[in-house]
Image (cartoon, rainbow, N blue to C red; front, side, top):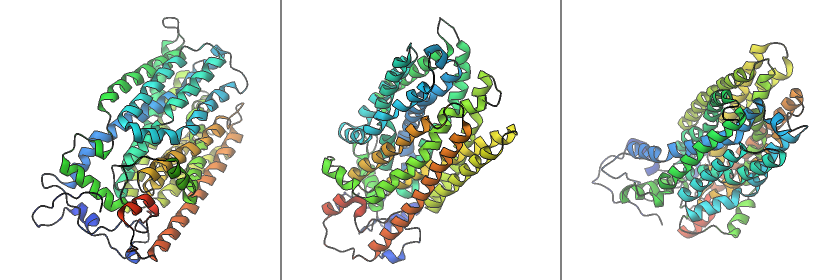
Length: 504
């Protein structure tokens, strides 16, 4: 195969957790019902003798996961802290009325939707370290500028620019993670990264309660301090990341040559040749977008984004309607996010252990639906209503990373994954526009109905996608694997390669 293999050590037993990578079955009919069999390889993938697979995976985790977690935590915090600022008087100070606040939320998603795919292409071309760190500095600076705006036009301009700088961060990090881990070990890392949203939600509430108490300090209102201090912290982190942020396997200077060869070989065994050596073209984009499964991945995420962003942007308003003051509102917004983080990691661990994704998207979605059902039918029981908010948050923010990981890791090759992951996030964030108008004028019941409708769309899309990839696996099982294709031809096909089996 095109990927170089490290020299094998003297004969001996393979490390236990590499046995599956070393002995894939070539008969598709012997694969499990979950459809997770990886690409057959002609020779064992052997770990360098100076280390073990587990130690090397831990080394990758240490050099990669903390960076993407911190990056996304800051991005999500800078994106939704406008909800906390609203509770401290942003609307009245800027003279916002009617749906102007909602419009300010909406305009963020316009560049976020349009520039996802170009951003991932640039990330591949420039390198994650330069591109993602630059984006971090950009959206941190714009967050600071939000703290200085004086009118409606100012908040619109800064929200638009915030979306422009943030658009490449989320799909870029998922793309980067997907190029380091095998499918059976990726979900815990994806969910840990994605659960930065939960940490940001919890931390944002605590931080806002403190910063809001700085009201009128040095002549600035509390909501301005929220933007100024959180944005400044993001800029500092972005500058540090310019020198420390990780890149792709091929760029990792902290790996020995034999370690790099081994990581590439085991990824090759799991996902096929990545075609990392060539650039992404417009023709690649067209080919990816002609695949109906890619559209299903977009609708999965689109459906769940509506309730997810509705919760992120309006949960402080909902909690405040329960009679809490400004500080208590921020503090009561913390527990649902904390519970969501713990539940998301439990779901991710179980998903990796069972090597299955589909049921672990549907189960959390059902939990969220139950929470919305409670809110639609209970109006006079505060503990029950608050518990329903916890169910909604823990369900949505556990299902979302499963959906993204499931779809991303079923895309083979750099070009298909870069385009497909950006498409899913970009198209899905159209739901963010809908979410910003889901709770207009305090009509919570209407908002709950909108959220339930779209989360059901997400569940339906997951079901159709599951049926589609099972059908594709069955179709591939009937094809002859030795079809005369070269390694380059297989690399060009990515997951469409007859040897690539989709994970259910």
